[in-house]
Length: 125
Length: 155
Image 1 (cartoon, rainbow over the protein chains, first blue to last red):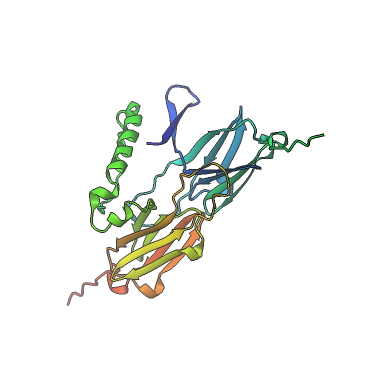
Image 2: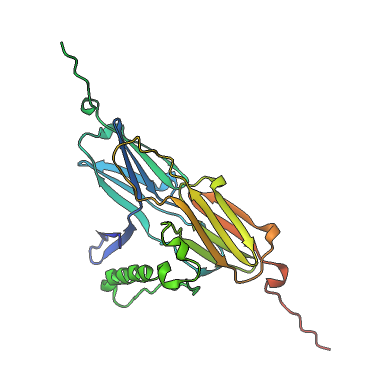
């Protein structure tokens, strides 16, 4: 039950058009240099991936395209919804240096911590 | 797991009940979890990973589509025996604990999906592609299993 429903009013404003999303599974790893975020989005290609940071919140949206198969569907377990998930960023993350890559449906984001936040040794003068 | 034809239960007449349709879909999915189906799935209860599988059929082929993000091709095994297609593999968790705090939602470990095919297939002509984390296995039907037109001869 991890579906996020966002409502958008249509142009004439009478009935809202709802686009339903599913929150993709994500793994977060932390080390001294920053965070690594891996998000599973099968069927999503680079062109269909959108990511943005707003007010310390990172949002990832992926539109999936299932392979077009001709024929009758006998059994279905996959969900047709697209993927969307937001993450609140630790203020120590340098949002300008976030980088991402996508490989076989897994988006890997590297979120480096800002320099001055890393543990620094203080020399005794 | 039952093999029934999937039909989207959308209620067109009452669009305001869209959200309830989605709740019902979620409950449907929840209640179709393995431990209700029994039969050979017990071993998967604690392995934690059951990738989603779709099955299609047309005149020439049976096509299985499995969601397997983040795998390496060589870690996926596809085998066919006695009319049962088995897709299995292992996703290794290569991370060591030298990193700091982690939160893991992605499944790791082994998975195994077996499906009995509705018709006979030609095992020599099975092909598979793995793109964008989706594995597509195409199994051409055996000649005698394809639908054929039968000519009626009137003498």
